[in-house]
Length: 65
Image 1 (cartoon, rainbow, N blue to C red):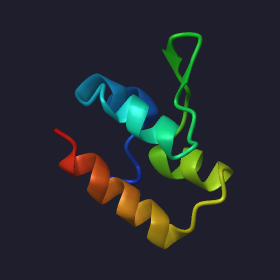
Image 2: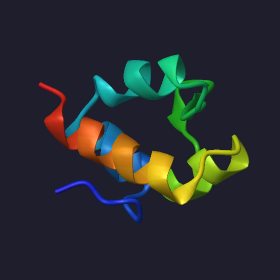
Image 3: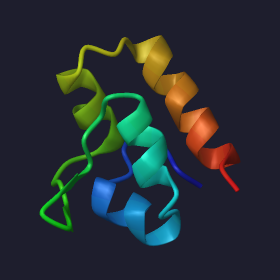
Image 4: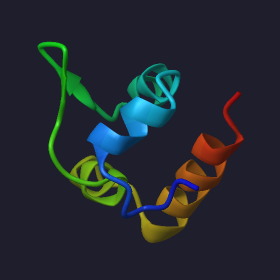
């Protein structure tokens, strides 16, 4: 299960489609082909997402097929 504390590196390993999803949200998670360090929450906070929005992102990431 993906949580706000899941690292970007772990996320990319289990759901490669998450890269495009996060990109569409304006959250950069890949740089030069390598995952950016940090958690989903940290990456989203850097882009100004609220705790509620981050919770929604986590739900949506878990629902990606």
